[in-house]
Amino acid sequence: MKHVSTHAAWRAGLGIVAASALLLTGCSSSSNSTAVQSSPTSPAGTAAPATTPAATPAVASGTERAIGDVPWPQVGPGWMLAVWTPITPHMPGNQPPPAEPTSETATNVVYLVSPTGDRYSIAEFPPADGAPRLVDWSGDGSHALFDSTHGSETSAISIDLHTGARTTIPVHGAVNGTVEYTLPEGKAVLESTGFNGDEPGTLKRVDMLGNEQFVYPTKDLGGAGQFSGDYLESPDGAQLVLGTANLGNEVIARSDNSLVVMGNDGSIVRTLPAPMPKAMCSPVKWWAPGVVLTHCAAEGSGAEQLWKVPVDGGQPTALTAVNTLDNAPGFQGNYGNWNAYETPSGTFLPTAGACGTSFVSRLTPDGHTEKVTIPGLKDSADLAGVSGDKLVIVGQVGCGGGTSLVAYDPVANTSTVLLGPPITKGGGIDSARVYPNEK
Image (cartoon, rainbow, N blue to C red; front, side, top):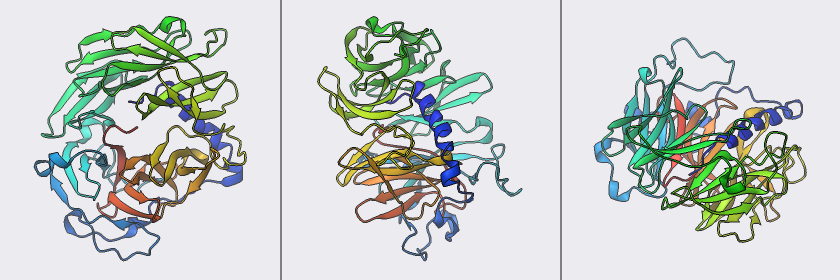
């Protein structure tokens, strides 16, 4: 599991850095990110025959079905969860037509989507729910977790994907941190907050009724430093890898132990030196058994790099070269990579672009990146994960909301719309996640 407290702040900072490129690159003012939005649809929201140019994504031949039709023995790697909203995304500052749905009137729908494009409506969030955000998918694939904030009140909503039944879990840290299922089966949730000055981040396990089960000791992590708020749980739930704040300033002393392996009982197993000198490193996800993909950001410069770090204390290996975020050769237009996905045809990375946009990059043999152009997505593309040998992408309206859920074949250079326009009549994709818990 990837938890984004301090890491989310880093990603938010990328928008500030990327905005400096505006004078050179400009921002798109297009109201639609996906060229296929003008394509027709048939009654009942099923896909119409494709009549658009070859550069436009094809439309999945799957059909829409009910929750009772889910073929659960088939659900597994490559399946997706997505939230469709009837609110059509627009560039910030562009006013929607008066007749369009708004957050005060919209009912969002949770879909389970197969690799071939069959989509199953699982649950709905009416306007009174305030559009809870999809944050996790349980390790056994049976539940989806959403966080919901109303003013100062925060809760987590667990949806049983077999029945659509919901359980509301009172939580307290999701406003400033994260809440996600425990592994392997999601019988409880882990609630975290990020560090704040000389206050360490917190991490605790809470049952499905909101009762505190265990508070992890995060003050100094065995002398390695205070907890940053970023952590990763092992697939069996027996261990965690925690990041340290490791800032080296007048508030927090410098330490090169940026990762700490902790037992589920709070005991320190070992500390791991930061693979990038004078940097704060955050665990991203399990790259391979016993190896954590780790994002490191250098102190004071914003330079960043992805590493593969063995949790047994073995020698880390750099996945990417150092990106100084200044359009250096090999990273032109790339203002940060926070994740990476391996496929049979290469390694692909979600990438921050100018003006708050994002795009997909392919890793080059020397650790640099090159931009991948996704057919039909002209403004922004958010890489959400991998389904088999295809990339799962949410098209976006520039730095605005999501449009359609798309499967992209990097070998054939073709893409297929799985959910959203033109399959649905308008609207967009609020969020998406790939099974099994791929971050």
